[in-house]
Image 1: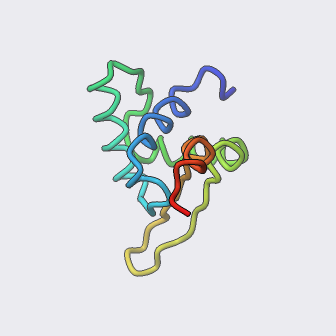
Image 2: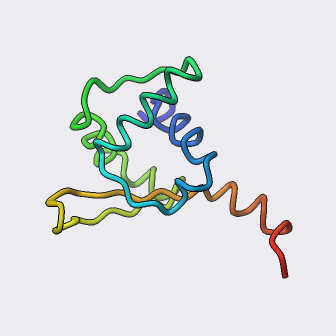
Length: 100
C-alpha cells in the first residue's frame, strides 16, 4: 500500500530542489538525502538501510513511474543500480514561467 508510505512525500520534498530533477542517484545516496530531509522536516522515515529503500523502490516502481517518471539502470562503471526521478508537478507549474 503506497498511500501510507512515507516515500512519496519524502520524494516530493527531495524534488523541491530542482537539482534533484532528472539526477541519477544510487539508493545509498538517496537514502542519506531522504534521511536528512526527514530529520530537518520532522517527517517519517521508515527505512533502516539503503537496501530497504532500494527494495521499496523496486516494489513500488509502477506507482513511482507514474508519479515521478522513475527510471533506473545499472551503472556498470560503479557496479550499482541508479535511479532518476522527475518532479512532474514542478514542470507543469513552471511551464508558463519559462523564457520563450
